[in-house]
Image (tube, rainbow, N blue to C red; front, side, top):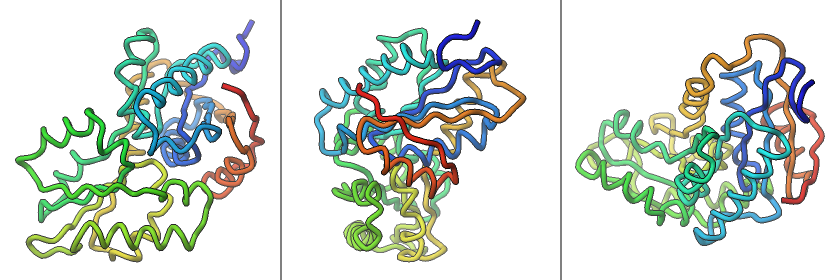
Length: 273
């Protein structure tokens, strides 16, 4: 007998959550890496955006969502597809739920150091991510390897969430201008880290602004590879995985984004968490 939301094969789904639709960029990489796995994606749109919230609020939301996904979907692993939530909550959640493997995301500054030739690296992220103890410790560990120009991008995740194209273009232009001179000459910024899971959905606009020689880095693929390593032998090797979409807010936003970015037509269930 299978448990609720368990596939006929007996495998439990992988849980993925974000404050909104940004985590779909991570989910896309996960489904490419693990096409046979079942996923449940929860957008906490009713309590978004996280980027301007304090750490206590974000931790409480992450705690409630983790409990919900365990109790209602019996998830085998949790992916926190949100830089802000990872920075605020991943360590406490790992202590509170020791039996649950939890994969977080963080701005891809380590790969950026390896890739950059000028060693001048821009980082676009939310204020909460940039101000977090976790991110500051990460930067400090790399301080002797590169110069990082960190730019809080107020409003950008929300504009992407709402798919406001003209606003996305304007904000990308403003924030990249604020970061400084991009290019490949000594002293130029040749690498830009997209430190929020929403930002990869503005990749085309950023590439148009900065040109093809500038490296744009996000963390979807590394997260997917780490997830595969953690589930290991438990990974299914047959069938097409099922996808469940849920939202604590406007389900139409998630449905449209999943249709546009993942090419899926799955209905979205509104849940209270």
